[in-house]
Picture 1: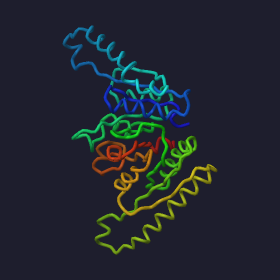
Picture 2 (picture 1 turned 30 degrees about the vertical axis):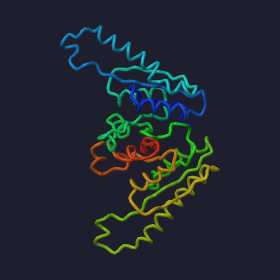
Picture 3 (picture 1 turned 60 degrees about the vertical axis):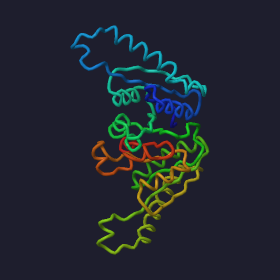
Picture 4 (picture 1 turned 180 degrees about the vertical axis):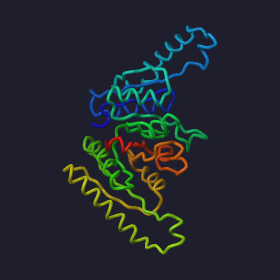
Length: 291
């Protein structure tokens, strides 16, 4: 069951409070677990330069108090009592470790919108998305934090990966009575378009047939009653998914790159959509779920 055991990265920011609220609202039952995790680093060189260990102990005590009160209050506001973990280490590694230890099905992070961060995925989210083995949901500024209530849009680029993403989305939709939209963007590469005659309509028809076949196979294999619409649009994937997020309650995409640098240089949908979408974005490590 998706969203039964959820790990949320918290740091007291508005973004992390929004992530806590969203995660708490998605638990399918009050028996679900929400584990709020804060990772911290002691000041560089604190041991080398003999900084009073008492300062660290005091800081840890203060962080613990905040973690157990204000930072996780949004969960209690909807009737969820969160578990808390305060651990030393890099946030990405700590969150991945805790998620593995508790058997989490999802990690949730908030993303704050600022002058320069509007288009930048945070380092913690990037590490979890490209190196982690758990689905990651990024909840941005202005996103609804209530229970999912609208369509779940799934970005379907390749048939094998699309099957994994669709199954994950249908798991959620079945529990909540939602519909799923399988979306594929069809657009010829610029260098091909400029040198070879292209029948755009033929390309789109081939894309439609491929997507329809994939959706039909997934629906038939599950015998699901969830409405699944397959939709092919002309344009680039990033822009198409961003536009689709206007009316979606969640967008689901796959993580295909193994490093933040590779994804950035490739203009990856995975790298940019979580910061641009108008609803939360779930990034699924396709290879990990296939294993």
